[in-house]
Amino acid sequence: MYEVPWGLPVIAYFFLAGLGAGAVSVSGSVLLRKGGFGSSRFAIARCGALIGPLPVMLGTFLIVFELGQPFRALNLFHLINLSPMSIGSWFLNIFIILSVLYAMTFMLPSAAPGDRLAPIRRGLAWVCVPLGIGVAIYTAVMLGAMPARPLWNSPILAALFVLSALSSGVASIILAGVFFRRKSSDPAIRNDYENSTYLLITSDAVLLGGELMVVFLFLLFGQLTIGDVRYAMDTILPGGQLALPFWGLVVVVGLLIPFFIEIFQMAPKLLHGRKFRSHVPLEIISPVAILIGGFALRYTLVIAGQISAPAAL
Image 1 (cartoon, one colour):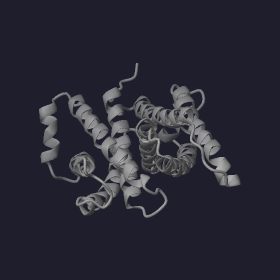
Image 2 (cartoon, one colour):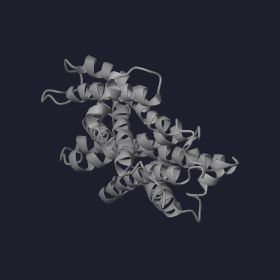
Image 3 (cartoon, one colour):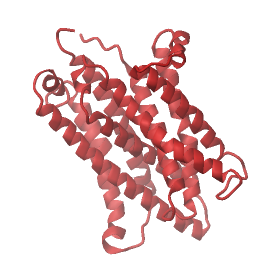
């Protein structure tokens, strides 16, 4: 039997923190972008802003109580030193506060583009985008800071977690749009919805393509390295203990299936200049598959990193 001190609460924290950080980063990027999304830009930014803080706060709640003594764990926020845990705790704390303030600028009934809160909203967006990316990177740094876990000591892990977080953020916004943004009977709003959805799907396809490349580099790095890293990588390669969830859920379900679904949706407009038409089943299947793959990625890497520790431990 292997000792796995980091179980589902920690894995859920990595996934939820990445999802929330990705949603806020995408929201801020869309809000600050000029052109492209039309009048839907504000609605998309609102979706990401309202989604983002909730999973991060839930994940933080889980990680604090997983430490066993939640009130003593809160002391992490009172310490200032150069340890990854201390820096990350402060980073996370600042992100939660600012992302909640950012979300509140969208909550007023009068919230709209160009309202009196617009300068504050844009200022918070400028800060929340890099902060969100930083939170996504921190979840990988938290793993990579443990030299006794060879699988996590890859310089590519941070890029993998960032791309996965951003893709999960886009997926959550697309999924929210299916239920909240596409219901309008106004043809102009409906057409704007189609255009903005096309841009979201196109952006996500780029992220998924990048994530596939980074997964390849991550595996290649492990194969070209000797010793404990090579041994640790065997746990997720074909024949390894976690090969099925990694290749089945992460690669096939979480990356290949949504990537090809999105290419299929984009192809008529991209190749032939035809009008983009959204399909509700595909708009649900693809984001759900991405979210499943995002969780499976954290699950396989966290568990594999623990069961493949050097025998000397």
